[in-house]
Image 1 (cartoon, one colour):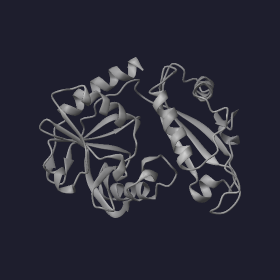
Image 2 (cartoon, helix red, strand yellow):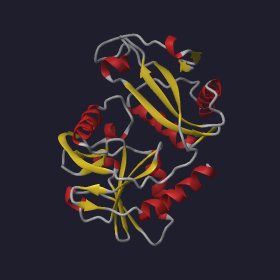
Image 3 (cartoon, one colour):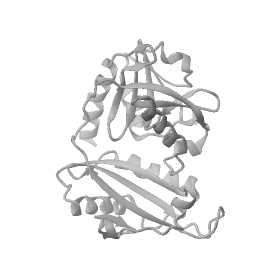
Length: 281
């Protein structure tokens, strides 16, 4: 079942118009959410990021879009798809209603919610070979639009094709200033001795939910110095560890970039703390 504008419909009946603005212009934002046994992980953060994204895109936020209403919409769909006792991935997409060209005819919105079962209830550390490379064919722009989850993801799509064609697990994306911003599917963290760095949102990094949780965790660990700062490609091979974060995998260690191989110790330590935080809500 799929939630289409508040109605539960079968997948084969969940149709969108060819004039849908999410399709026609990328006029859409979305949240990827992890649900464990009927509990939405970090729901408050997801909700406020969705509201912020809609405001940035100048969408009309319905009066009904309270945290309680949207949470119920998600959990009703989870129940309908028999995922109440299973880990699940949820995509909540909001699009502006059709009409107009670049200038919308309306600011009112529609939405869809889809679900997919996941294998594991909590995050597991994947230490298998995970080699990455820089994607330099195209850049993302620094600024607020790059920090939201919108349908404008051409760089991520092309980077994923490049990675697939060249045998890499992932790629790291640069901004117009040639700073490393993030991976194709998540935020980037760099560990050098007792220093942990991550690119700032102002560089074009996604305002990631897992990133936000890790920033809180690291700030409570006096043995590490946390920096939100621009990262040059030259720093990558000097690091002890690199890892990627998103709400689906939690923390994905990078094991190799060019000739440099990395450990996974700090990533594993942080993943344990992230699982505890997820259990506590």
